[in-house]
Image (tube, rainbow, N blue to C red; front, side, top):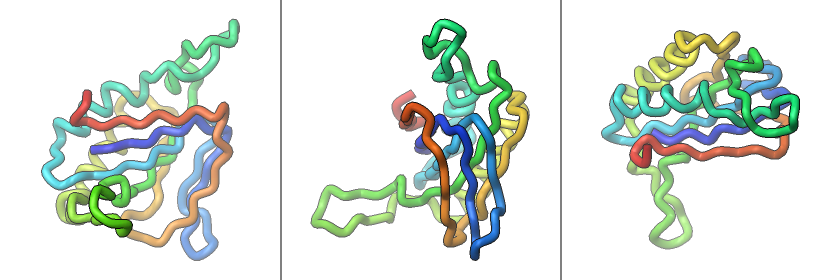
Length: 149
C-alpha cells in the first residue's frame, strides 16, 4: 500500500464540478492499494500517518502531528501509485489491486484514521474521475510504502 501525504492549508475533491470531500489544514492523502496488500499493510500506514510530526511548533520546528494540531484529512484513492514505468514509456497498472480487494482496504484505512482520533476525515469516490485541488503547505510531501515500513 502506498500513500502520498501532502501537508495542506486546504484540499477538496470534485466529481462533475461538485465538491464531494474536503479538508482544511491537515493532510491530503493519495492512497494506492497494490495487489496482495492486506490489513497488515494498512495498519503499518495507520501507525505512521496520523502521528507524522510535520507541522511546526511554536519554535518553527516540524514537531507536531496532525492529531496535535486538530488537523483534518482528505483521502483519495489513487491506483496510478501502483504504476510500473520500468519498460517503455507507457506505465503498466497491472500491480494495482482490483476494486474487490482495494475498496475494503481503502475503507479500512479511512476508518482507521477516524479511530486514531483525526478530527475530520473525508474521501473522494473510489474509481470516479475526480479533480483534486489543494494548497500544499511548505511544500511538505511525504511518500510512504507499507512494504518499506
